Length: 106
Image (cartoon, rainbow, N blue to C red):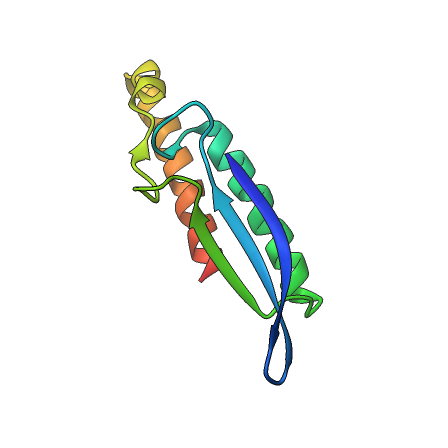
């Protein structure tokens, strides 16, 4: 669901190195957040942090592979499996991790 690549785009004063993160949940009309999305997005953020630390990128673009949406939200079918005390804690933990990843991007 998360594809990353680095593009070098020519500009008037040289080249800008762009790290592109494209979100595209397979077999779904919309991008949804599930455990697989969180894991892949986490890997992309770690890759981004390493590139930024080594001064290998100039800019980040996050885009959607879907025509009409960016992210629809959590995959409700998956979240319903975790109903109950333990499920609520796990769901909260997953949301907290994803929130942290978006904070890292900022």
